[in-house]
Length: 293
Ligand SMILES: C[S@@+](CC[C@H](N)C(=O)[O-])C[C@H]1O[C@@H](n2cnc3c(N)ncnc32)[C@H](O)[C@@H]1O
Image 1 (cartoon, rainbow, N blue to C red):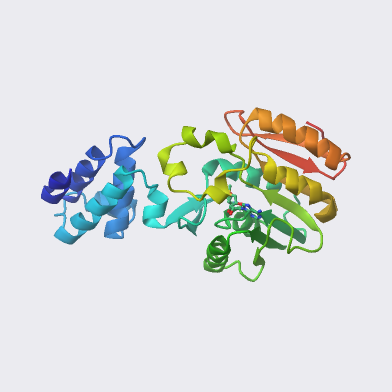
Image 2 (image 1 turned 45 degrees about the vertical axis):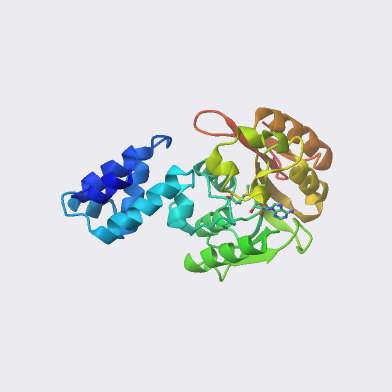
């Protein structure tokens, strides 16, 4: 591998050699292109324009190092330190979960149920990189929001992201064990809490189990410990007409959550969130009058 990258004459041949060295990646060519753009500091258009340019020795050396890291299983986002979510760039380190495209359906769901021009308070439980909080505040110009995380390093990253995205005037990020440092009521509470059952660790892909923070992944025997805790207290923090929107991992978890939610918020309408492939992704509990799933 290293010899091929080292001997690549052009940028295109360097990318090809990089892709060849990533046989276990689900998208070797794409990975190699992203790493090449990162090394060369260029965008897609420039990469195409420079395809036949000579590949410099220092670029090849760096590229080779990053390809090695990717080949060992490290996610691309931790190598580049960035991941796009809701069309916005988020800085990520191994202290935070890499934002998942699937979680964008939580943002879509909130927006479908919300008057964008109304002033409102948003709470993001387990904010990680701050991706959900920042995406919502970006779409809701009159909203202010609080993100909480029990990881001090995640809190730092979320604060940095809010600042870089020009949202720090409306976003506060707090170190808190769920609601422990929170006061007041919120119109929207969103949570992508950890939900992987502890026993599923051996089934996870290496790029998740060996690289992403366990604190962001694992959640007790059935993966519902965090939501049990959150639902015990949600009634004290969700405003009269509030929405609580959560992501979970399986239809079984969804069924259990709906039962728990019915006992903790008996008057809230329940709406199941499905992605474009009709897979269950989450649940809305709405204290507003109206729909039931
Ligand atoms: C699945 S990650 C979600 C991160 C981010 N919201 C996202 O969607 O990418 C769950 C987050 O919950 C945080 N967390 C875990 N236990 C917590 C607790 N007791 N209180 C607050 N946050 C917690 C983790 O540190 C992690 O950042």
